[in-house]
Length: 209
Ligand SMILES: Nc1ncnc2c1ncn2[C@@H]1O[C@H](COP(=O)(O)OP(=O)(O)OP(=O)(O)O)[C@@H](O)[C@H]1O
Image (cartoon, rainbow, N blue to C red; front, side, top):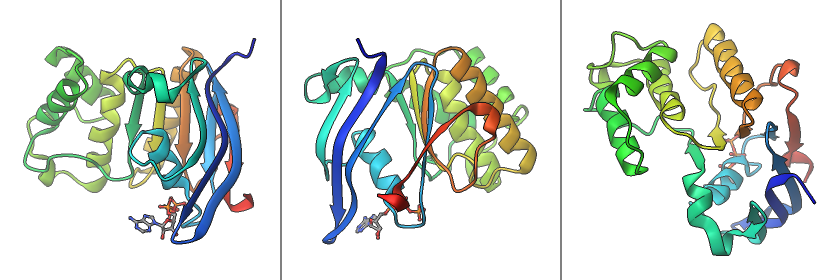
């Protein structure tokens, strides 16, 4: 029996009569990281949005834990955390309020203590009560990333998680990916920069599809 938890088979998508990808198949098992690479406009965000359930512009088969997502997409979305390439924050709210709000939206009951812990982990200790509009682009991105530590998702879907992040921060994010992988988590991400070889990530280049 296959150990794959996420299976994507023969995916096809087009935009304005241009084929983004065709006959694209891949799978993810516990502890695997898959990087979707490719030039600007290749369809990386489109693919992640399809997987996150935000777009239905595709053909093909998606399965989660052996079942078609046509039948169990609710379970898939409960077990998945998607971070888009925008910061996805309410600018007038503080990091603490944003995280409380996103936990509530996901139906996760998370004590403020855990949210403070997540903000500390992403280097935002001391910024918990600042309005997000007063944070830098990189700090806003870190608030977004802190959401991952307030969820118990099995799969992280991350669109350009390194955007606006400083060099030390990139290494930190890679260490979080490594921790998550070691704990059996799965990661599907886009990035224009190569990942550290120590992560052992597989790569699919949409430019080649
Ligand atoms: N909202 C939209 N309306 C029309 N076309 C769109 C829209 N969003 C994306 N596209 C088109 O779909 C194609 C794929 O876009 P997508 O954002 O998936 O690429 P990408 O590989 O993520 O690019 P980048 O590296 O620049 O982020 C592009 O040609 C783009 O013009």
